[in-house]
Image 1 (cartoon, helix red, strand yellow):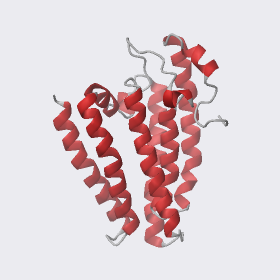
Image 2: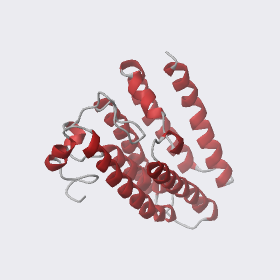
Image 3: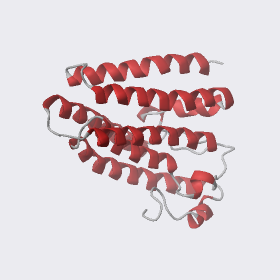
Length: 224
């Protein structure tokens, strides 16, 4: 039952903290792209989170244990730090882009970015709904089994696919092209993380090697 108050608190604190950071860096509250992104992010996370809270609070709690401190291995601590830094740089540079007028992004492209962010956040929750072991850390649980259907029938790491979509969507939603520059280091970090994670899964998760032979693509169907 501790999951419920923790979820409610984080559901209030995280959007407020994100909003304060956004508008402080932007230097203004007159930033419609920022307001729309905050609303989209809040709705895209609160509805699926509420569903998980009612149906599978254990999986939801597992997802909340994230970050370098939660990773059991040093390599993954470094990689997840690199990913967080890439994401933070994407966000901050995109907001600074708006503040100093480096880019001129059409409204339609900004709204497309919001759609991408919403799709990425919903995709992340759908992955957790389908696979309750889809934690934020790289580890194998005692009762974990290979999931090979649904989203996992398309790519082996749909959660990371959502991460990439989000990293494209955030700069566009905030009206920035310069923020897209950090997509490249972000992709490199994710690719190295995926390879390291798959090595662990092949060693410790029964049936994973056979799964990789069935589902050939890691991140993007028909590409990689």
